[in-house]
Amino acid sequence: MNVLAVTGSTGNVGGRVARLLSAAGVPQRLVVRDPGRAPALARTEVVRASYGDAAAARRALDGVDTVFMVSGAEAADRLDQHRTFVDAAASAGVGRIVYLSFYGAAPDATFTLVRDHWATEEHIRASGLRYTFVRDNMYADFMPYLVGDDGVIRGPAGDGRVAAVAQDDIAEVAALVLQHPGDHDGATYSLTGPDALTLHEIAALLGPDVRYEPETVEQAYASRARYGAPDWQLDAWVSTYAAIAAGELAGVTGDVEALTGHRPLSVAEVLERLGR
Image: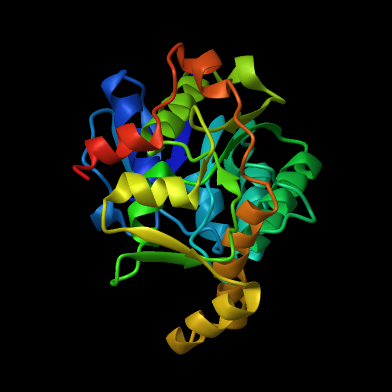
């Protein structure tokens, strides 16, 4: 029997994946940092481990055939944590990793955190483990959080477009892959919504009082300096918008529909589900 481990079950996408697998009757081992936050689901066991704790990760993954690896929380050392976890998986005898990566992962991506995803993918490739990479575009569910307290979205995205994808669609794809992982070995899937929108168009969907004001990169850094965030975090915030301006998040793919058999949710449909 294929023993499946799922990380990130306390989060938005990982939690959706765990619930879908449980509903499908698939046994799973939930690997979490805090067992008290793990969802209570049928046919699951809960083990404690963090990505940066090699010994705990090896114990948690002992006997596992396939692990669903959600990218870790944003941190200065996130890539090091990822590498530690991948090495622990290989040491524990895991057969394959299904990694939740990001759309357009590349070493020179404008969005700085996407470079970490590429480096993680490369480390998985070099590990000798079988793999599947599920690269999602920006979350459609996250669009309301771009709006400031004054009802304005600000950032250096220009008139660039983003093919934002629903977390429900990402989770459905991942759950389908995990139920028949051998069918997807070596595959890379790029998940998007059905269309690519400008932030002007997204602002209009968010409400009549919401608008988008383009910034220059310099203005974006200045407007965010008051948060006192470390440099790597500021770079990530600003480069998210710069990647949109560069056209790196605009391409629409058919991967969601090819895998699930249905059209992906649009930003408007996601907002409707959220009651916006």
